Each structure stands twice: as C-alpha cells, then as structure tokens.
View 1 (cartoon, rainbow, N blue to C red):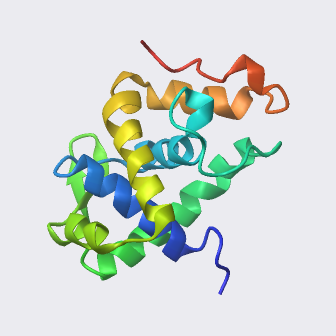
View 2: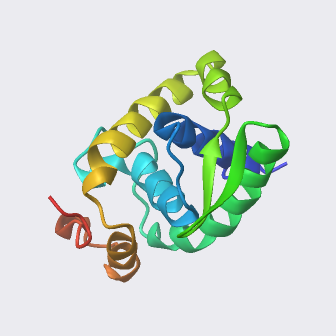
Length: 155
C-alpha cells in the first residue's frame, strides 16, 4: 500500500475538513481547495504549512480530485461521511460519527491537521472564491512563491 497520498491518508484529511465544517456540507471543489490550503497553509498567510513547498505542487490539484473522490468513498463506506444532492450539485457531509471519530485520533500530525482545518474552514474559506483561487493556483508559476497565488481570495 502506498502510504503517502493514499485514499486512507486523504480520507483522514477530508474527514477532518468535513468534521470541522459539520453540519455544513462541502462540494468536491471546496474539499480539493481546502485540502490544498491545509497542506500549504503558510502560502495563504495561515499557520506554517504541513507539507514542504515543492516546485510542481500546482500539479497536486489535478491529481487530488480523483484521489479525493476515492477517499470519500472510503469514508462513505465506513459511515463517517455521506453524499447528498443539493440544488447546486453533489455535496459531502460528515455523519454524526465523523467528528466523533476525529476526536479519538491522537497522532501529532492529526492535531496539526485539525488546527489548520479550523483555520481553513472558519477563517480562510469564508472569504475565498473557490473557482477563482483554484484557477489562480493552476496558472500561477510555482517557482515564484513570493507572488502568492491569491487571485481568487477576497478580503
């Protein structure tokens, strides 16, 4: 099993985000961007990043969507998340068991992940245009991180 960016690891990150937003739901585009923001929070004027800056990290977004969908299926099968249809499309929501499961995870990485998820969901995301920020991340050269790819961030 591939330990890094496996459906299990991405599923834990998604569950932490869904639990932090609970009872509100998130769509796949929001989850992809929030996951990226949690991992690279230092780039978005948040807490120090969980993962190091890599030159090709904008490529993560393209792969992340498919892997995140697989991870969400794992969460749904485990009864920790659910898929719902809303007027705007499909959304994911933590079940009542989701936040309880996250509470029992004690690893230092999960604690740091939860801190960044709280920041991303409650401080960063409310003022963020998901589509514009994603587009900016995909089109901004990653070699020059000093320019900060915040074209879609309102605030």
